[in-house]
Length: 335
Image 1 (tube, rainbow, N blue to C red):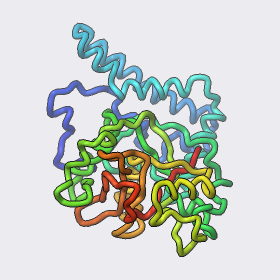
Image 2 (cartoon, helix red, strand yellow):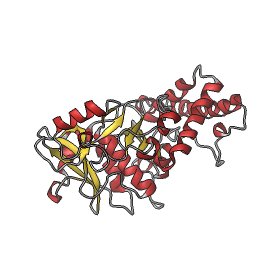
Image 3 (cartoon, rainbow, N blue to C red):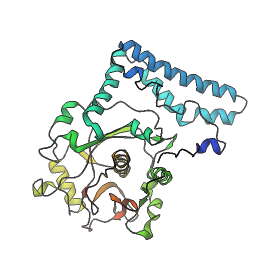
Image 4 (cartoon, helix red, strand yellow):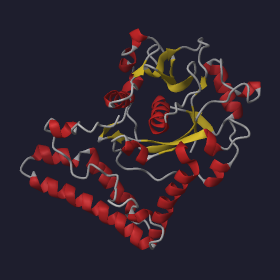
């Protein structure tokens, strides 16, 4: 997923115009970013962040000036995802008080500390050599009180220990984020075998032709997903999803878990792969487990995401309502 030490940036190699400000992680040379330093006054922290955003804006304006005689290149820079991310970043800061800015930044740091390895944000993406552009604030509904509360899916445990808070970006390295794009990233990442496959070897490329594979993530967002669905040996029989058809699973969902929605395939795939890359832990329960996702396969059946095998992350692309081999239902907390 990350580029190896001997690999060059592919855009630089193929002649595409490098876009200034493409790295909008707003990083800082020192280990502690100035806006993260809680010992500084809020106004200084906000100014440090604004200064870096202004620097990115200046780089983009200078780049357009350098190619002002070439309208095509001007449009390429202005329409690039890096430029759009920079515009979003600047707009988000407009009218934002220093106190509110620090509240957002410190809230993210607290969430990261509270969730530990279950926090899969910008830094995890960046550790794999991937820039995800503008990172939205964590939703106000994700509070310490929520994460410290009892998990409805796994009684006796806290949500912070049973859920992953995952950043699902709109773009990766300036390109639209889709299941196909995630597959390309995994395929190019040396040292791991993480490409996505269908249920049998002969179907290894078939899923790529299905509509869900090219669905683009519409915005960068934080998603709170349970690590696993309720197990029948832990919750009462009527509250688990295993070995149930879609209609029966929907009834369980409506009756017992109204605070959750059905998760999308890309959300589950992202959580599974990021958790594996960051901590060597698959999201799924065991080799034979799968979760039904919201999208449909080629004949109307559900797309299901499973565990990691030696071949990669297992994908069943067309599970019908009559199949009973599926473990459960992919859920995400409604935020």
